[in-house]
Structure formats: structure tokens, C-alpha cells
Length: 342
Ligand SMILES: C[S@@+](CC[C@H](N)C(=O)[O-])C[C@H]1O[C@@H](n2cnc3c(N)ncnc32)[C@H](O)[C@@H]1O
Image 1 (cartoon, rainbow, N blue to C red):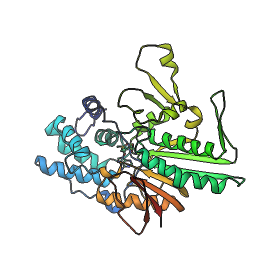
Image 2: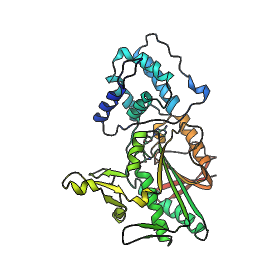
Image 3: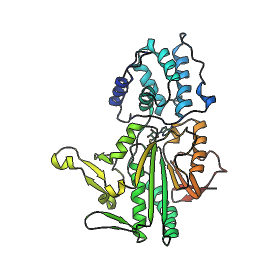
Image 4: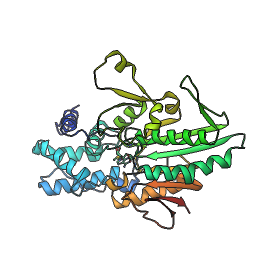
């Protein structure tokens, strides 16, 4: 796909960067900017020095996606590598074209896909997940066990390729089993009492990551997505049919179909104005905010507050802090913390 204004082949470029770094996986944003944010940058066709152009691009990326590419590390390094591979003469018109294009355009999709960091794995930060199960999921289940209709709704914001959303669904099923509300049948199926309406929504700015998430299928390799999977939960995964037909090839494991049925995945940009879900019991947004600007970090926490119901809980990454203390109350556990909506 060649951008006609600048002559830059973004797809080829994006593919090259992906080869350079396996973490490079890609993106797309649903988000829309407020009218006031649309034209933050006084772009012109005139010549610009490299630093000036980079600064404009960084501001444009922040305004449209909330991603902070201003510093070294993470998205900043990725942007530098991207700029180093682009023909210098085309850069001004490319930036100009990006400013005019909507965030859903292929150019933005390819750019964002080159900037995002997709590192994730099943049962990341197990202390926090154990605490979530004990302090949030188990009491929620106990409180609704006698109801005719019982609901559990969770949102994983910035779920990347889906491992976190599926981990949460497995935790929910485990908590339901403990409460006598779900059963693993000898034929391998998971049967949940029909009173339960369970939904785990995984969202990300990266549509390519979400396409992967929907397959529920993951390559099994050392330090790969299964590195932290408790062995007791290996029954929630199945070897894929392809692997059975091709013994000796690197194997994949697919999330059990009954767990996949509890999860769905949608594109969502945390710079967007409205949350994709309301009345949620739990929001997880772990290891995402570190990549965003201060402005969008605070904004996103407002979104989580709106998405949660009155007694809802938020789980952030270990290096994240609550930006607006009036919104959330910390709930300390062993080596971890969750936040309760105030
Ligand atoms: C390091 S991964 C974290 C995955 C998972 N939450 C975990 O902790 O394992 C960061 C994710 O944030 C997503 N992301 C970055 N900026 C975003 C934005 N503005 N809106 C939504 N997702 C974003 C990236 O695409 C990436 O998938």
C-alpha cells in the first residue's frame, strides 16, 4: 500500500520493522478526537529539519492515539527506527498526509502497528490475579448464586493478543467451579449453570493483535505465552488439529472453545471519549498506560471509572499509579494492589 502523497510504502515498511522485532505488532484505532484536538499541528509543506518534523509527528501521534513516542524506550525507539528507514525527502508530505487522514485509515493502521508493544502472556502477574479471584470474583459469585439471572462483566483494556482476557475467563470458570456453579465434564466440556451471563471484553488499538486474539491459538515456545501458565490450568488448552497432522513441528495450543465463547474482542482506542462497556464488575488495564501520554493516562482512568459499576474494581500494571485519587480506593493484597471504584 503506497501513500500517494508521499510515495512511502507503509505496508512494506511495517513488515520490515516487524521482521526486525518480534514485538512489533500492529494497530488500528477506533477513537475519534474532539474537534479541538483535530488540528493541533500547524503543518505546512515547507522544509522542516529532522527534529522539527519528529516533534510534529510525535504530537500528531499523541493527539490521535494517546501513544507517547516522545521519549526513548518503547514507542519512542520504534518511531526512531521507523524514521531511520523512511526516505527523508518524503517525510514532510507523509506527515502532512497523516494529519489529514482519519485514524481508521490504512496509513495510520500501519504506523500505529509499528509503534505498539505487544508483550503479553497467560497469567501475567499471578499475585494480582490470585488476589482478584479471592477478593473480587469469589464474593461477586457468592452474592449472586441465588439469583435467577447472575451477571459477571469484565473489560480487558489493551489486551494485545488476548492472553489476558482468556486468563481472566479461566479464573472466572475456576471460581465458579469452586462455588459449585460450573463443572468440567469427562468429555472435556465446561458446563456453567444457566443462570450465569458472563462476558469478558478484550479491546486494543491494534486490529492485527485482535485478529490473533479471536483465534485463541498460540505458539508454544520457551518464554512464550505459556511461560506463567499454572500446570493445573493446562486442561483449558488443546493442541491444534494442524499440529496433530504435522508431528515434530513447533506446536500450538488453542484456548478451549467453552472459554473462547465467554470472550469477545473489539478495537478500542483509550483516547476515545466513551467506554466500550458500562456496568462492568472489573476492568483490567495492565502494562498499557506506561505507553500513553499523561493526558490520555488520566483520561483512560476516567473511562474505567465510568465503565465500572458502583462496586467495581480496577487492576492496573505494577508500574501504574492512579492519576486521580478521588476516583479509586487502593485495596492492598500480598505484593499487589487493586483499586475499588469510589
Ligand atoms: C504490553 S501490551 C499489554 C498487554 C496486556 N494488558 C498484558 O498486560 O499482558 C500493551 C497493549 O496496549 C495497546 N495500546 C497502546 N496504546 C493504546 C491505546 N491508545 N488504546 C488502546 N490500546 C492501546 C497496545 O496495542 C498493546 O497491545
